[in-house]
Amino acid sequence: MTSYDYDLFVIGAGSGGVRAGRVAAQAGARVAIAEEYRIGGTCVIRGCVPKKLLVYGGEFGQAFEDAKMFGWSADNVRFDWKTLRENVQNEVTRLSGIYRANLEKAGVSIFEERAEFADPHTLRLSKSGRAVTAEKVLIATGGRVRPLDCAGADLAITSNEAFLLDALPKSIAIVGGGYVAAEFATIFASLGVETTILYRGAEILRGFDDDVRAFAAAEMERTGIAVRCKAELDAIARDGDDYAVTLRGGETLRVGLVMAAIGRDPNADGLGLEKAGVDRTMNGQIAVDEYNQSSVAHIFALGDVTNRLQLTPVAIREGQAFAETQFLNRPTAFDHADVPTAVFCRPPVATVGLTEHEAREKFGGADVYLADFRTMKHVLAGNPERTLMKLVAHPQSGKVLGAHMVGRDAPEIIQMAAIAVKAGITKQQWDATCALHPTAAEEFVLLREKAR
Ligand code: NAP
Image (cartoon, rainbow, N blue to C red; front, side, top):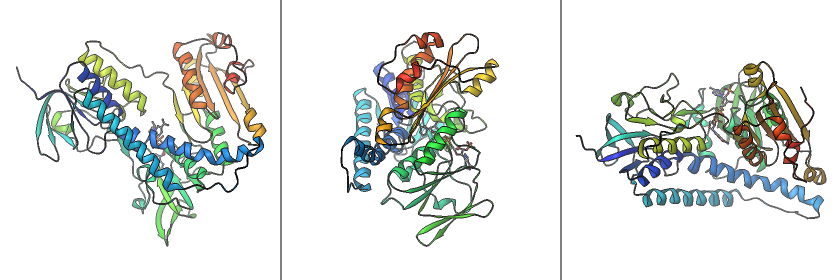
């Protein structure tokens, strides 16, 4: 029988890889993990966590405004970017340390260097040049920012650099219309940067419910973000200390900074996958089955490098399912249906289940319930921000198929609504829930009249 250095070698210490490695080690497996950058991965180091902290940082500006009608004076408030940046980075370092400590506590060997396949069971470590062998290998290398493809593309920053800017620019053009574009537009605008989104399509946030997309874009514009749709980039050039952004059609914008937010690609190049015989999809992702198994029986993959949902909690659940299946003798496949998700723009967007369009396509119709209102706090504050709530139900059975919200606390509210949607309850059961007054969330259980 062949003997290997490890029972499991995990490539990538992000959310999914760390969970899988830790649970496997706690189950008694000899586990090693390799990370070429910082332990914690995209979510902790340059994604969800620092992003959310910057969103919180930006929210204070509006809060000081809202406070006036509640009797507070908040004159001469000032904002210091470096204080926020440093405090966020310190928190990132603290969390990365916790991830490391948890791995060490579980007995996982950590290699802080890049690992690549030398053959199906052997990994070559880049700094030390060492070769280690493992019975099973888990690829959890996540994604990497997709670069722009236009003249002067190198002049644009990405979200990676946005966290570490020396100073905030006066103005910024953000290219893209997805999660990162919407969230960073909100962060920059709320910190006083004149912000423009340049999106190639007709409406930002493709994939979300159409009412949600229109409402979110309108609310973002109301907060001062210029949302320019059907805007395709031709070139970026230096213009003194600024940048000239030329759009197809010839129009030129002059801005202090350009940021690319046009998606993420699977981080699978240069891993030696061909030496291991691992198949990739047309888009370069690693193709896996419901048990995270690749085309090679002993090689597995999860998270953003695979052909599924690019979300941290999904990678964590896939990591847990992998470890249970392979090391705890409990075959487990994570169910990717009805995964809630949020975009932390202002006001935030959150959603679970089917959009109205998807429900109509799937079931030939949909019962739709809508509420569009201002919260009592915003009314008193004189803040025009509005809230949208939308429920989509099956036209015959009445099963709640989707819940969508744009508005303050939407991610917190939809996380709870996701339990009901996942449990498959009907609109009648949903309505049996008594309102909790006075809240914004109560409007969700008071949606009686069908809008369509
Ligand atoms: P994304 O949501 O996929 O959005 C990419 C955007 O860039 C889309 O608007 C897309 O337009 C546009 N685009 C793509 N290629 C382009 C090109 N060549 N030229 C111009 N525009 C282009 O990507 P992301 O915002 O970078 O986020 C990546 C993923 O990370 C997300 O899908 C999400 O799963 C995850 N994420 C999650 C969160 C969260 O949970 N809050 C936050 C950030 C990221 P089209 O719509 O026309 O394709």
